[in-house]
Image 1: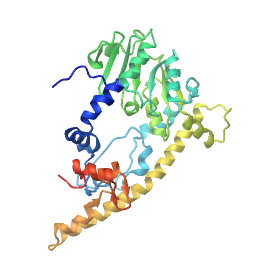
Image 2 (image 1 turned 90 degrees about the vertical axis):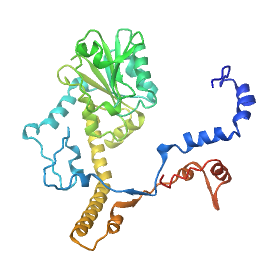
Image 3 (image 1 turned 180 degrees about the horizontal axis):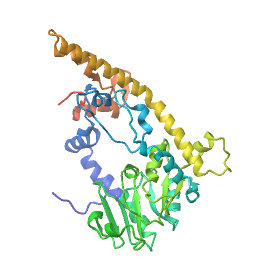
Length: 367
């Protein structure tokens, strides 16, 4: 049933009529609890089955292979797997870094806020591509950013970005949105005319391959914990880097401060593209060190599971229950009631008790 004449912006209507009518309504409270406080997606269990990449990479009768565009993570591979680089590709890392270190890429700027950073990027007529490697544009949707950027650039005909369904779409100046693959721009994107803008969010700055005009320049955002792998992969979206295409780096204040502290630079010292790359390499080393204990723990757990399985297979008196401790682990999570409601020294607070009486959402119990 539809109701008209309701204005949620009207404070007197909201406080005088709507809240008194729905404040103690059981159906409304249950709907709020089931949809917001205790959604199905938040259901958790006391135990979980533990596996990891070590299980996938264990030695088998048939050879298992995988592919990675870079080899920076080779130190965290399971010990049963080794990195086999093609000898012809040995120079790839150095060649890519050489392209990024070209003089045309030696531009760095920082700003006090994401909004000011975005305005700076949009106001630069040389920038036609925004690569959000540092995930600085999380507060705005891809569609809204593309629409805003396109409206600020009268000379551009369209903006290309990834929609909510992870497919490339084109926003034309008249406001229409159509799939990129079926639009005329998919065949003419590499041409200088008509001029197009392109925005790639953090998740799509790796793996996206589009032919862009060789005169295009991209803005590359930096962010905390951006490794050399992520940074270089983002810059590689400009396939003609070193042959006409270029990039400019934009950093938030915390990254700017981190770079200066890493190399003992003052606030007045100029940060170059070389400094940006060296900082990203330091972040790569920090990430490897951070994940080493996790890598070690996964390896130990895998070895325990493997030995338990071999013992089970070789014994005629073993039961399945003997395998349970090696695969079944504590989830280490809290119930939704513990997450959403405060605790008193004697247990649940009064508000939690009242909510529990209205609707039970004990997520620790499997369905």
